[in-house]
Length: 345
Image (cartoon, rainbow, N blue to C red; front, side, top):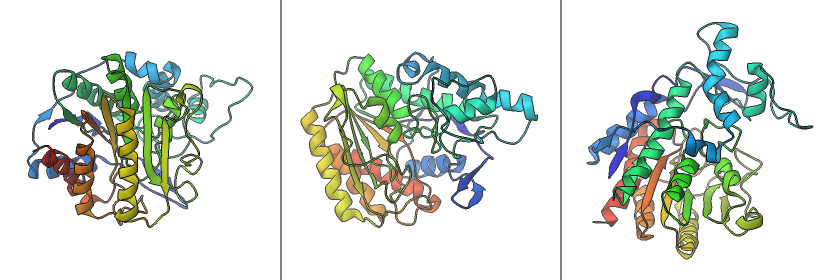
């Protein structure tokens, strides 16, 4: 399987995040990619392709252009006000209403376009965002050229980013961008399978009223876990999208028994949908002991997950999302890919 990866993410680093009652170094770090790339190489996956540069046309199909512009301009505006160094984050959130739009202040933009304190901006953030988007779109192009499965190693991740809001380490929604690009290239239907421990609230919101993308998510229930306000089983889509959104929330402490049964349920629904392409938001923060998670999956379980996804028999585009248990992170990701490729012989 070809891996699409760029080092351009590396300077998106050095900021901190608020974790409940403390300010800590960001869990979403460049070292995550080192662990993943090294483990994939040990497992025999070393066909690394650099992403080609792409414009913003597809991005603007799923994200508000004003929001995208903010992502690019945020740190330069912050730096102009405070000088070099440090990181930008919002002071206030969610004050939309009465047709309010952000003014020229970077603080106003941060308040409007972010929804938590886990999307700091540093000097290298936009370059990383852009490289993740390019990795997603290059994966689409490789599949157009005949690859049946590819892995876009996106950093930062994307599934919490909605049309015009960043949060949860996510700035642009790489999986949504990939899905839209697959549709642009001729796919009639795309399914997105999100197996990250956290609900893919941004991806759900982007496609919630559409029938050409089926979104399915296995995640910790919102009563227990971030993002707390979305991810209920009752959220099934609206208008043309009614019936094309499937959430299977599970309580903290869930192990692979019920999780695996939920995966089989989701894959059955995906097969019935008959998509032309399967996009997988690959998060492995469901691993036992993940510092950002609360499920109890074990490393061998990820081989089974890869095999189950392969059994769906669909062209598959993997994109990296979460996973923060550093000692096991690379192994867990490599196990999914090994399981998938092993099932294909």
